[in-house]
Length: 526
Image (cartoon, rainbow, N blue to C red):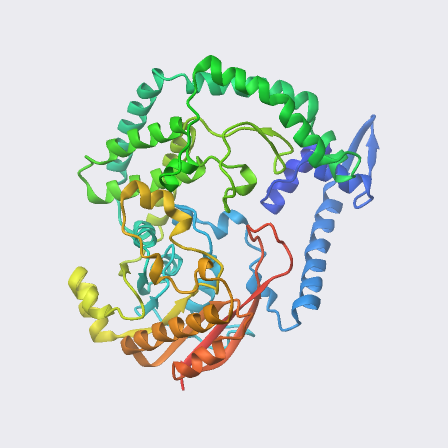
């Protein structure tokens, strides 16, 4: 760095990436200079940027974003509930990112309603330490983890066996030394397994060829700038170069004898290359004999997380699979020719280290409280009986104390098929699927019949869960109620909506980045 407040373009991109906690490329900074968003400063024939001016620009942009969102979504939007002040690392802290899960809420939202603070919007405290919280749509267990941090007990229910596995894995206490020993054993065995394979050597050779090709035809940041300024037809150019590189790829595949077969018998066959499937099965067999129950569970979670990152798809379609990809392709996300994966080892190695770190971080925060996720249908489950059957001490406490309230995010109408997003793990682990019991799945759409079914399902959940609540309960349901179904749901559940908290939803993973909000409905006994 040349001075305390002057940066080169490259230094500015690194500084901005840390400041915003998201990638900011050299071309992003060049764009700001080119269009006069920040001043150009020339010194000794070098282009520099004032760090204070750059910080001021980002601050104004964020303020402008709030103004625009409120204009489009209404001035009743509570911007404080955007939690925009938190970095991505804080919204995915410790065990909250043990495994990807589409549709989860951020921990700060849960904490806001469960903790003891009050403000201009949250005018009273709803729960106290030692209370029991219920999440009847437990998902990936965010409410359970936050309850633990805050000294609350919590019980979750989810129709998905795999969702319950993720949720419970986050709150288990582990023998970290045992996990590390088993990881080392499996990783060493996988390295030896790969010594006899050609896919690593093939991938390294392919990466070398791709670097030469991409440096020539997709130079950074020049290509990004030309694409942004429409000086080049990115789609047409990308497809042209994709076709140009394909013979190089096919020649290497033939030379190294790489098996690219995919099938149609199962999700696993369709979305994973043969070389990837072989490695997955190899690691899976090494996990089977692990003696410690909890070590085996966390290793299974790591493997599932690894599997998800190794699907045969493009980088931009990872969250919403479109078509299997078995060859090199132009990647709009990265602005160059990219490739599918040919080994799981890199992701396995990364996620094992990351998991150990996250478990250790949570161990420093955990409280001596109970959290359990039950696999079951929240419309009919007898929560106290199931707790007594599986976790006797917690069950007896729950029966004596009863549940103080609910914090949950029910599925939205026709948005996600929750079993399908983890279909690879159901295939590998052989879990029973309960797709037919999902409420509001994507496959049923958003038509009149689907909405009526949704109202019936959510109402049934609330009516069943109400049996286990204290008399003066508080229920908070996070929903994007674009069809205005929740007033009817509340009425049929013999509840009253006493407040609505409207929040902007930032940092969405969907390609549609238009302003978007959701409502946290506060319900009480009518």
